[in-house]
Image (cartoon, rainbow, N blue to C red; front, side, top):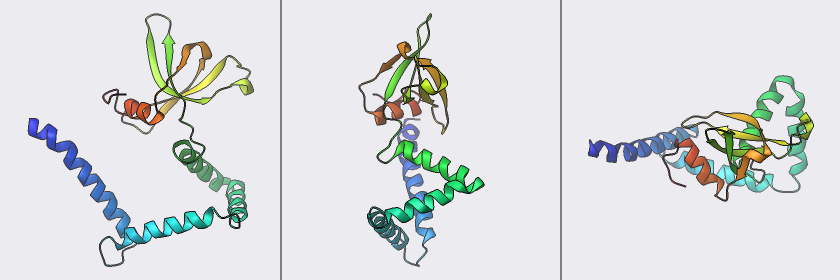
Length: 172
């Protein structure tokens, strides 16, 4: 049993990495293993470099406006863009880890991330929005909670997310 507990995480990690690399390599199947990934890395780097240019920025803004105006495309585009913005880039949304007291008695707490510091738009000035990711899942719940029940954590967001996703098994 100890051998299984030792080998399963290592084997599954290697398998998943290889499966992802094979999938990426097959996107640009050029007949030479690994060449597809190399082409993809070069293309992504080139697109990132060109996309950050001040000359290209207006075209990106126009394309984004078109995507936002087309009914079905706008839902898909804005959802994907918000998801990526939440986790990566300059506008990360899950950067304020908190612990929230849920009930007065007994003491029950949840760990999450503040996504809105003010709920004034809903006439709830004394509340804020906290997102609670689920363990081992790509979902979660958004709760509006009283500010007095929220304590900000001085821990890196990535460590808190790892703690939540692992179901509290990993250490923070």
